[in-house]
Amino acid sequence: MTDRYPDVDQRELLRDAAAAHSSAVRDLEAFLRRLPEVPDPADITEYANLLTREEQTRAERQAAASAVGLELPSLGTEA
Image 1 (cartoon, one colour):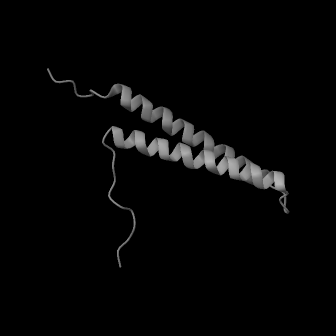
Image 2: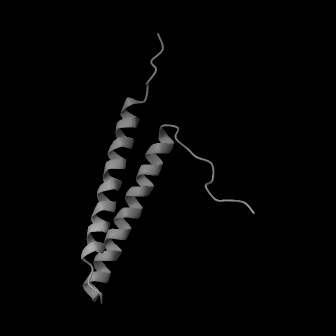
Image 3: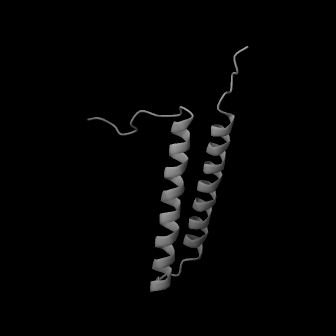
């Protein structure tokens, strides 16, 4: 009998990567909700750190998705 789900470990890694990305996005959203009207240097530094974390976790999620065969064609539109 052939195992229909041979990459269980890879799929779990994908789920974990998606959860990490969701957490990073929520943290970024929470920061933006409390952002003062005039950001100070500490706010800019925090934003840079949160944005970097969000981008890294997105890349990790995408790599994990590719590892299980979830690859999409380019999402850009051609003129």
